[in-house]
Every structure is written in structure tokens, then in C-alpha cells.
Image 1: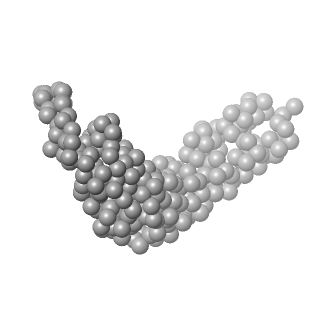
Image 2: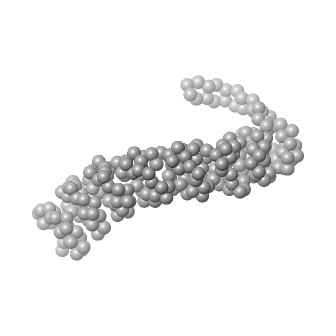
Image 3: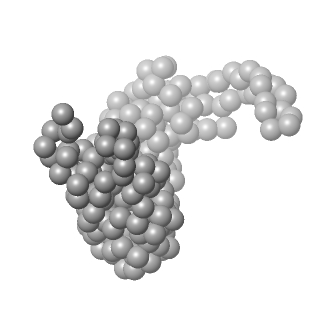
Length: 260
């Protein structure tokens, strides 16, 4: 039973799967009650959607409790379609987060800012964030798992802005772990951001090592990467000269346009 109607289900469930049919009987009093509450009278199609999402009186009561404006039918259906449920509204409200309008409430739900995400950030040490900060962090892929990964690599306490910046530059757990495996695990995150920006990643380092250039420090790798020195070019030069030249000479050859 739901406020908008009752589902009568018939089917079979077993081994983690199920199949069957259901019939929905709409409650005529629901439409009348919504009209009395100032929401308006839903169409049959709208009432079906509200029944499927279990969007009913509890959601409306919670919105009123938090001083949201009374939604019109179209708004209520939109909320139901986007997962703005009673649990979502009450959960965000309990954490101290309330938006100015129902439209913004739908937007933050669409962006994945929910009570679980907010609690996860708080547990990671980022509480009392503004709604804008939550949205920015979520949009840039900074979640509790990412924060934990960065901290596990000895990053220490980073600000939310720092986490967003390094995430934007593609410094993630795989990149940090790969660089550490190749002997660059003691680098500060600022250095890893720089190396990432210059295209120096584990694949590039391994390919250069295979071409005979092992033990290059980060600066040497960046100096080689910037003008386009890669393993293919190094092998080409070695094939032409019959020997492996120094990295400085290799960069010089590249800067001069290659070997004639």
C-alpha cells in the first residue's frame, strides 16, 4: 500500500532473481487530498509515477516541516522522478542542509549529493561544508574513497581545494601507486601534479626504461617528455647511431628536428 495506490503483485522469486506481474489500483482520495493541500490534481499518469516512487504525504509533510514551498503537481512528479524522496529530504535536513527552492533540491540530488555522501565527507574530516562546496567536490570526483586513497599514500591532511585540484589533474590512486612502484613514491603531491600535467606517467617511464633510460629523475623525465622524446624516438636514434646516447643528447636531437 502506498498513498497514491496499492500494488497487487504476483510472481516468483528465487536464487536472487524474480519475475512476475503487478496491478496498480490508484486511490481516488489521493488526488483529492493533493488538491486540498494546494498541490493540485494529478493526472492518472502522474499519479502512477507518484505511486511507483512512493512520493506521498510523508514527503509533503517533510517539505512543509522544513519550510519549503508547497510543490505543484509537476514539481512533485519531477521530484519523484529524480529520487527526491521523503528519506532524501529528511536525511539532508537532519544534516543541516536545506536549499532555497525545490528546483535546487532536485539539482543537488542529480549531482549525487546525498546524506551518505555528506556523512562520508564528514567522517573524512570535512564537515560543515557549504552546499556549493559539496556540489563542487562531488562534481570533481572527490568522494570519501578518493580522500582515503590520497591519505593512504602519505598525503596527510589536504584541504578540499587541494583535493579538487589534484583530482582535476588526474592524480588518482592508480597514478600514485604506479609512480611509487617505479621509485617515485616519496614525491609530494604537487610534484605528482606537475608530472601528470607533463604527461609523465608509469607507462611513459616504463617505456623509457625499456629503451635504455633507467633511473631518470622526475625533472629529467619531464625535460624529455616536453619536446616529445619517447621510447619510439629513442629506439630510432639508437638504430641510426648504433648506440644509446645520453638523455641530454637525445633531447638535443629531438629539439633539432631529429636525425637527417
